[in-house]
Amino acid sequence: MQESLAPMHSPRNILLAALVTLSPALRAEVPEPAPDPQPQPPLELAYGGRVLPPMTAPNKPAAAAPAAEAASAPREWDRALPFFAQRVIDKGYELPNPYFVGTSLYLSHEARRLSTLRVGFNGAPLEVLDFVQFPHTEIDNQSGQILAGAFIFPFMSAYVILGHTQGTGDIHITIEGQGLMDYLGIPGCDLPPALRPGLCGQTLTPIAHAKYTGESEGLGITLAGAWHDVFFAMPVTYVVAQVTQSETPSKTWNVAPRVGWNQHLQGGGMLTWYGGATWLKSDFNITGSFQLDTEDTVIGKPTTMSYSIHVEPVNPWNWLAGANWMINKRWSIAGELGFGGARSNVLVTGFYRF
Image (cartoon, rainbow, N blue to C red; front, side, top):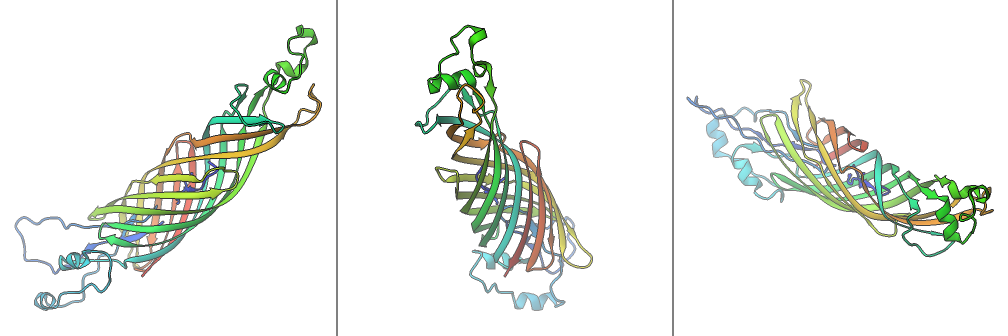
């Protein structure tokens, strides 16, 4: 839908999509070593979700205990996931809760390119007609999603997505009057100019108003990493949706690389500020029909027009900026803005990890 009449996250759109996981990074928790003449910077690994970035947990040292005691009683990871968790624990890193559920709300406005245009008038079969064009369309989409998943590896999470989408769109159309008369078999455009019907020299510019709803489902993974408080993440999602006014399922790919900075709060928790870009690719057709107001022309009655068109983004890329508040180890909320290109969007999410 986690943008088209398809969900962005879907979703830019679903996603689409989108759609949205927030997840803490790994922070080193090893006893302070003896002074090193050439100290090395600590390494940090991070996790990420479907749309939002990985989060770094506050750097809280382990409970005060002698180094010898800590070495004699190593910590043990008691969860099935992620794989290789114990190896990470043995190196002195802290792992976040591996399982998560979340919800998101995605709002977008986007210009779409239309192609493979087929139309028919008054019940005739659809075909390609040169005198009918679709210059552009604009879509407003609202998509709600839930997702659930887990960290499969210390650097990768995977999740499933279920969602509902709805929205409206204005499809701009231009129809040459002479072409329409010829198609309908109405004579007159070959007469001398003074005797020709006015429609022969006119171009009709109707707007078809589309309204749709649908359900979506998909899969996603996120690869991520960090160094100190700087992180990067690469969420990738694939969403399939069935929406009204579409003769085929909508298939949407969403890739959203981003980098950011983790700000530790004095009262606990952490804010993550980030920026990046979203690439959204959707592939689907929409169908519909409406009536042309041709009663006051030589046609003398309304004309019904049916259409089938292929819809795709005008520009698959747009920029993003957002922030996530990691309240504690279990709860987090976030907001994100998308801008630039031919798409603008707002994303709000909330997650629980256990």
